[in-house]
Picture 1 (cartoon, helix red, strand yellow):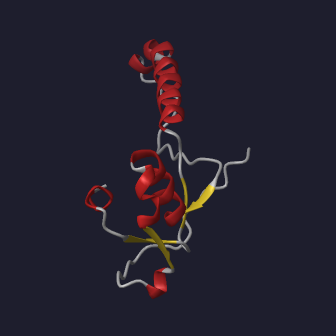
Picture 2 (cartoon, helix red, strand yellow):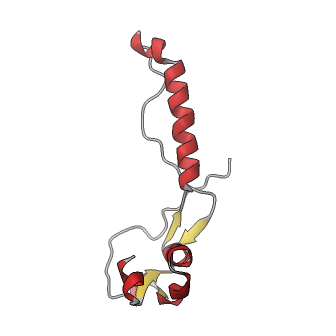
Length: 108
């Protein structure tokens, strides 16, 4: 955001992939899970638990980090969309130790 506001170009990787989830979907999931938990409250009090672990949410679309940056720029600064420079991770001056593809298959 700072770079967009300042009118500075910045790199975003076009060969790293993510599965973005819509914030409204997250809110719906939290509401549903909370309602379920509240319905189960008496069982929880008796020590009967209905699940543990991590809830991992991902969207349906596999997007590159550059596509995500361009989408964000298009919303918050449409006139500065071109400031996002799609760049291959290997060609970037930034050396990041992260997996290239952490997208999720959520087509159930």
